[in-house]
Length: 556
Image (cartoon, rainbow, N blue to C red; front, side, top):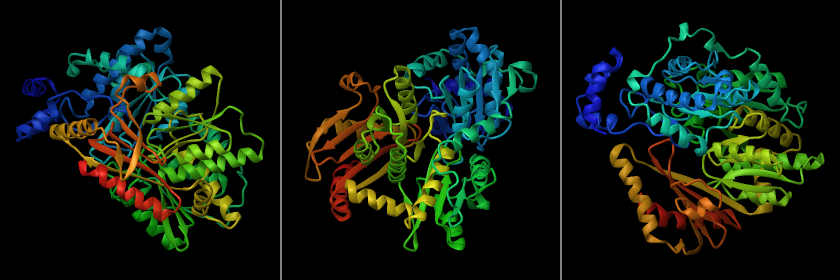
């Protein structure tokens, strides 16, 4: 792509706001970065920094993506066009504007859309697509990314984020849109019957369906105190409403409960990051809370901290997943509700602890690539084949699904289940961390860890390529003194034959059951490193992790 030619074209034909932004750029390198390519779909659709340019997220790149989606819908026929598309958005900059632009492009193509009247959680969009029998869905969100980002995700008729079998076709249709500046977009207020509001009762239907996941909705909650923060995002209304219905004592972090496009009262809206817990922990210490729950802005990820022996301990995504899985399986076993063909799903970078727990209950475990869309796809595949019953799905990056009324990770479900678990364990004199220690005593001590190196811009992309290339060329045989039993390269045909889509992922399985995986992020300019280490004790596991990390992270 001739970036200067594209820059000049945008200067000539874009709107005044975009032109002013482009004219203010004085660094030619920045012009190149904004125009050297078009945005590409990753594991989470489009996601990038807001701004003018073909390689930025703005109303024109949103229109281009939607025009490609519209062509896909039209190819499916008139019934698909009438069933239409549900559209949701979060609290980020320009989210409502992008949602209206998406609806306008669909309307210009004769396609019906239903747009929420205000911000909603991503999992509720997944629910709405299924409940309303829409042909697809769109969510405008950048999940847990910093304020300067936004994003665009597509969903299929099952409520699952679109996977390669659809996006490969859609990307070709998007690429066929020659001029994003000329995509027709009907004015939102003049689209007529082609754009309507999502029915008001969808909220209540979602809330009621979500409550059905609970084993003890009437459990004694009088002694449990919960601090909750939505990190300025979409969880504030649904989570607080359902917890109130259930009778929980919730202390909200009020400074983070109102929508803020700039996330003004949080250092980081990502529950994986310690900074997301700073205000919640302060609030918890003030009121003596038992647990802290925080969700990311679009409410598909949940982070938790537990008061244990006088301090608040943050749980990792793998730890929360293990506690939740064990609790669900044990409760279902007590009720004789464990299916003979039960199946859990997690990803190739999720700890093996969950697999061990599932096996001990006679439940199968199936791995997918990173990205909850692959878990949603697997749920649907087995549902169609009638060969397995979904029990639980989760990933290390703080995403969980208990009931598949949604087909994406759901922090509303996760929050109310976590609160029931905390109440249950408190009733028998334990904390959630005690429950985790019980798991370790039975299954072995697992340490999961992850890190990343930030690789922005053209130089960053080349750096990621160099890291992955070096690993492939080195053909390592051991890590930290432990033999590598198996190396899996998900770019190779042999992995596709095992049912995995082609992906730039390397995974080393070690002789002692530990593993290491490396992959470029699909949603951020980062190269990510994942570790799962098992030891007889915490000390042995930590020492092993340290040795392994030293062998891998020299690449940074």
